[in-house]
Amino acid sequence: MATIDTSTEREEVKEGKEEKAAYYVLVGGEAHETQGVIPEKRELMHTSLTYVAAAYAQLRGAGVPRSRIITIVQVRDYLEGLKDGQYPKVMYEKECALLLKEGGSDYDFDAVCPSTVWRVVLGLKNENYPKVVPKGKDKVKSLTLAIYSHGDSHPAVKIIKHQHQHQHQEKKEADNAAAAAATENGSSNLMGPPDLKPHLDPLKHEWFVHMPYPNKDRRINNEILSFVATEGSKDAGR
Image (cartoon, rainbow, N blue to C red; front, side, top):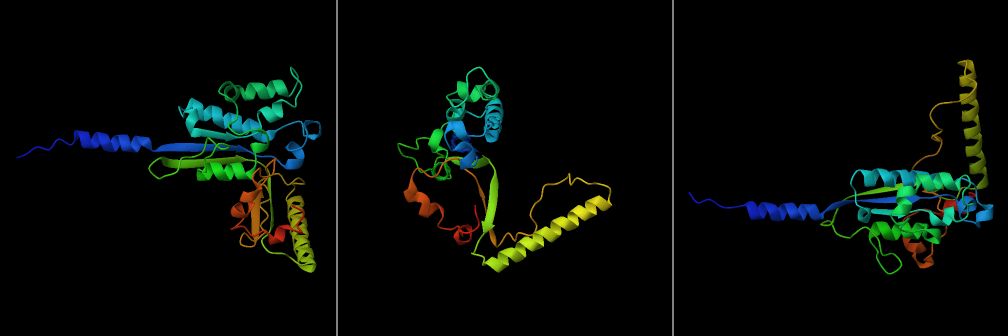
């Protein structure tokens, strides 16, 4: 009986699998009015930065190489606006120590914007976006996109005034009912799960996260928003 040596074949398959890798995109977003303005007008604390730095340190500690972690967060942008040797700069420098030691954020300052996330995730590499998730199923095994930010929602379609007033009244009545139930049960504070806004129909609203800067490449706006219902945001105050 003839014996076929498949060791080379197995090794080639193994090497092919090893070429596929898991990639991680860590994004730190904040509202423009809190962290996208001049340093003198910004809020003192940059919450999402600590989460990105902690996630980065955990991934590196787990053996994930820096080449497969892409960070989009205001590291230098934020730290340069703080006073040396004082709180909170000392605290943030400590929490971001590994990220700073290994080169800082891949995209910082006004590159922390929606179009950067879009290009990085889709692998749209050019001279301004040199580090992106590789294209091709043969290169990427999985992609983890972690966005740390605040967010909000707006109606998917434009709501006329009396509809908005009706929705506001419904929410007010629901809140009053919840407060009354809590008081009846002997609890005056509504500590517990966060308000998930059950009055908002997920099929009729769009949810979004805040980013500190607007898109650097305005030409890409139409592409990013091509499948998003934005008409209802125009009068929603968002």
